[in-house]
Image 1: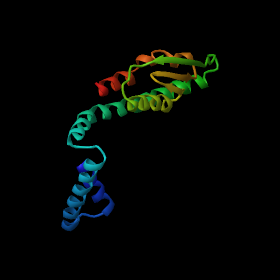
Image 2: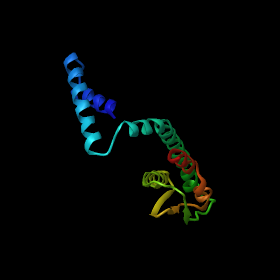
Image 3: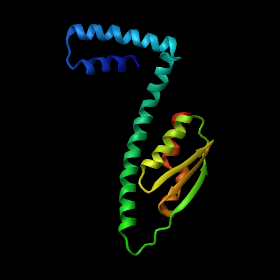
Length: 152
């Protein structure tokens, strides 16, 4: 977090000089101390987030790939005159422990074309799919596996 504060200081200043760097190091330290002292944060949380950073980057890479694939699948479905579109409402349960995982899962589903998260109640997701083929395997998707890995 300290590094993020320092980098934000440098970016917002728009140039790098010795004075800006030294003052930025001091200001970033003061802000980091404040966050640790009054906002229930600390170096141990920094380490936990750093360990999950690789998985988070992998998650967003997979999300970008799935969005692209779903775009093509939706385009193929909509442009196909021979295929009948069969919308479906799917409910499935997950075993996520954190609200962050539920949040990421719900938004990943909604960002993927052809699917929309209708509701999330406890660990039950309700998803509207443009076609029943989009609903296949949604409860055991790569998103679920990566989020479980990030939680555990």
